[in-house]
Every structure is written in C-alpha cells, then in structure tokens.
Amino acid sequence: MVFGNWSDPSADPGRPVAYVPASVRRSAKIVVAGGFGVGKTTLIGSVSEVAPLRMEEPITEESTGVDDLRGTPGKTTTTVGMDFGRIHLAGGSLALYLFGLPGQIRFRPLWEDLTEGALGCLVLADTRNLDACHGALTLLEERGTPYAVAINTFPDAPAHPDAELREALALDPATPLTRCDARDRASSLYALITLAEYLTTRPAATHLDPLESLR
Amino acid sequence: MTGPRRDPDMVRPYVRTGGQIRPRADVRLESVVIAANGPTGALAADARLVMRLFAPGDGDPGGGGPRGGGLAVADIAAALEMPPSTVRILVSSLMDSGHLTSPPSALPDEPASDVLQEVLRGLRELV
Ligand SMILES: Nc1nc2c(ncn2[C@@H]2O[C@H](COP(=O)(O)OP(=O)(O)OP(=O)(O)O)[C@@H](O)[C@H]2O)c(=O)[nH]1
Ligand SMILES: [Mg+2]
Image (cartoon, rainbow over all chains, first blue to last red; front, side):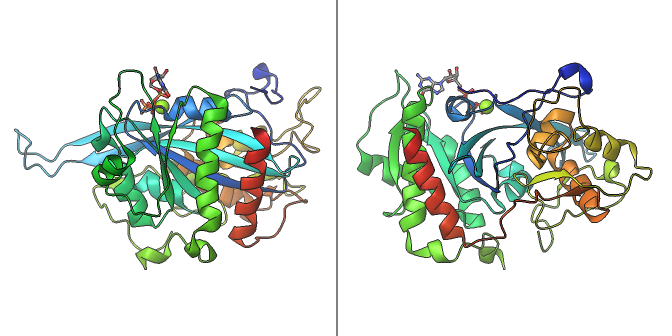
C-alpha cells in the first residue's frame, strides 16, 4: 500500500488528510456494496493507495407507531459508516474513488448520493448468506447502476456452481459473476477489472444517466 | 437530485448548512475542489473549517497546489468528521461564493465511455 502525503495532524482539528495529487485532472467512483461483514472495507483497504477513510452520515428514522408499544411515533438516529479509498490511474491524471456501503433498503438516501454519477458497483456476496446482498441488488436496479457480483471466498463458505448462484441471486445472464479474496490486492483488482470490462462492453454503456430510470 | 425523496420517513440534518438544502449537481462525493483566490469575507463556522483544510500549512507536503492541494468532498467529510451530505452542500456554497473551485487542470466532462476505458486500462496496469 502506498500512502499519500499527510498534513501535520496538529495543524488542523480534524483527522489527517491525503491531498489529491496536482496531476489529477478528473475523478470517478465505483461503489462496493454487499451485506454486513461481507468484506467491503477489506477490499477497499486492499486496493486503496491512500489510507482508507471513513465518513459517517446520521440518518433519522421515524417509526410509524404501528409496532410501537407506547403508541407514539418514535424517532431514532443511526449513524451509517461509509468507507472509501482512492487509486490514482492513467499516470496520476484520474482519481478513482471506491466507496463501501451496506446494501440496506433503509439506507436509500445514502445510496442515492453514492450512486449518483457512479461508473458502476461491485457487489460482494458471501455464500453463507446470499440473501444479504438482495438489498444492494434491489437498490442498484432501482437506480439503474450497472454492477458485477463477486463471491468473497470465506474458508467455511459452501461452494456452489455458478448456475446455482446466478439463480439464487436472480442475476441477468449478462451480469458478471466472479470470485475474489478481498484480503488480496491482486484478487480484488481482478474483481474490479471484471466490473470495468463489463462496463466498457455492455451495450447500454452509451447512455449512462443513472437518474434516467427514475424519471 | 430531482424529485421528492422516495422514503419520506428519512430526513437528514441540514441545519449546519445555513438553510441551503440541495447541493450543486456537479458537486458529488468524488468531486475534487481546490481553494480559489476568492473573497476572504466572514464565513460561518463550518464553512471556515472546510476552508482551513485548504490553507497552506508549514512545509505543506501535499504538493497539490498553492494552498494544500485538492480534496474530494468525501475527503473533506472524513477529515472534518462531518456528514457527507452536509459537506456536499457546504462545498456547493463555497464554490458559488468563489472560495473553492475546480482544479485548473480539470478536464471538461467527457463521455462516460472514455472514462470507463481509462479506468479499465488503469486497473489492468496495476496487476
Ligand atoms: N477469509 C476471508 N475473510 C475475509 C475476506 N474479506 C473479509 N474477510 C474478513 O471478514 C471480516 C469482515 O470484513 P469487512 O471488510 O470488515 O466487511 P464489511 O463488509 O466492511 O463489513 P461492514 O462494514 O460491517 O458491513 C473481517 O474480519 C475480514 O478480515 C475474504 O475474502 N476472505
Ligand atoms: Mg465495513
């Protein structure tokens, strides 16, 4: 892992920050999604060229009161963490940001911000709990964000043939399905390459307005 | 972002952004900004915190430009421990007021397919 340049942490009150090199002429982003604990943070850490950072967005959820024993609408604030890292490509002229977010339907507003302008999404799945990525798949389809699925291979996870996995996840035949070890940089990069290959070759690549499907 | 939110049960705190509730469409989490030689007038506390990240430090190692270099909205949110939705709006305001700007070398928006090709080529070079 190559770490970026750090400002003196005593110079400002916040956390240290790695500035974007002056060579960067444009930025882009890819989202890394999946259920809780599926390896999103690990994958981002494996490929990032700067120390991965974390953002926190508080969300307020209002319960409808239906299952509130006191009968009053409740309000709870939860903080949702989003990890991200950065890779510098094309001779340092392109900063590719990778953002990780659990695919929970109740995180929809965060998903809107995250998928806006995203090139695509890598969905991590764990065969011990395939259902955990359904939230991510639902949100991505709503947003019209193209995605590839990578099975993160945990040692005690059952191995299934691709056809069964595709069926269980209800994947479109064109959607790439690959495997990776999120702890391994090259393996994680190959999963991202699988996604990027799909993004460059799929016919819809000519019209990439993520909001279009919502209009 | 256009149209109403689809989940009315969820609201986000906009109180820190001086009432502005919607970021500019071109200010996304990955958008990189730098300090502009703009006005130095009084700013609200949160906006001042953002601008401090762009102030030149002693022996600034960033090397990214005259005032510390560029940062994406996400980098600012992480550094200041502020919600990214708030930072998007703060950065939008600071761009509108001339305090922040896009890097001078920034390329104009290009067809997404060009960026995709560059990402694919770049990732392949890394393995
Ligand atoms: N064997 C194996 N373990 C992994 C792999 N990827 C992640 N892990 C481990 O799984 C655990 C969870 O990984 P995280 O990267 O924190 O998962 P996450 O998706 O970010 O989790 P949340 O942010 O809590 O949703 C960690 O203990 C990792 O070390 C993998 O590919 N193989
Ligand atoms: Mg995580």
